Image (cartoon, rainbow, N blue to C red):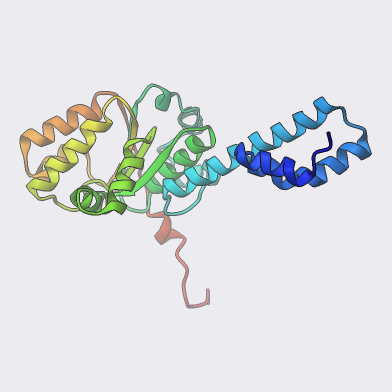
Length: 251
């Protein structure tokens, strides 16, 4: 029985092997030219399908991660950040802390690389098959307050809560209302012991109480975040100011 290429492609599409279906005609020609066995042909198509699925999955996860920019840890300028050693950076990129649901708290003045480092670690985690979500604190509060009335907020919150690593940028940048503090506590409580969190802030945990405005909520949040965590202090001058561009010449 002779089966046409079109019929084979349709069967592959029905089986959701769309990537292999796209290259079927060229692959059949290669198989004839190179005298592949049936096993070689089948292996080539299946490997290609799996490879493309993995690539598309990473592309989707990358989009869902919502990083503000794309930077790898290899681009992190350690010579600009003397408070973090190369050995410590290598330990962080091994991601053992993520596998054991540890949290990282990155503290320091604006421009010292907190967001850069968190994105680099997030990229490393994503590359190794972990689901990652990045969200600025003001955006998170908006999502928490609108998730019951807006489908887009509900969908993004679902993705964030389903992540292996959640990066919250600029924590405690602004004071919260009491209702916001309660929503934030509920959010942290859902992540507790099921996901790792990276927090960036220019204020230490000892200052969070006055911004959260509720001593009981503050204690509960700190208890869950600090239970299994590593606090990393980044210091130095602002990288952005140091390397700022100017409209004037050097003269």
